[in-house]
Image (cartoon, rainbow, N blue to C red):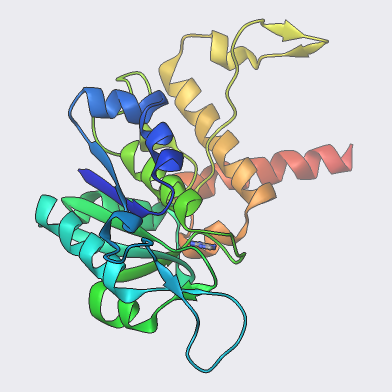
Length: 250
Ligand code: ADE
């Protein structure tokens, strides 16, 4: 999977490509990461990339021509890539969207805006999809592009080590991930649940399923509306209900 980021601040994103899992994925040739400086495509002497808005008003608008040339350059290097524009007006990013982008594309080209906005014709002529990472406004799209690249890259088989798998991630199948523990066995009076020390794989699987259901119920009950409990989940939830009833009756 090829990631290309079009930005006025390439150093910001370059350093992200050089660290952690992302750099490991690049070293293993499972992903590539490149930055293109939009300013390099400005043709005037002053390397201008913004201009005043037609109709007046405050702030500057990113010009069309350098953006178009930067997008064409990125597409030449990675022809089968989808062009996504980072904007708070876009489709909201989610784990579902991460999976869709990870397995539906050979590459992604992220267009990161700065200033007060981008010339409207970029949206209509050059961009395949607009994506937002949430209902808040940042000073540019770079952080948003890194959030998206990070969550997509870890889904590409082999990027995470064989011991870390995205299958039990929170939001996979609309459930939160189960509780995890490591040594020590006891910390300030709080013990690791016995079942996790038992070595009984089926019991551990059921305990984890229940932990995941309890957390989803308490923290994100809305997820059950998106994906109704299956037969095994219903059984575990009923058991939990009965335990709570008997606890309340004590
Ligand atoms: N650029 C500025 N704010 C943004 C957001 N919330 N999501 C994506 N890109 C942005």
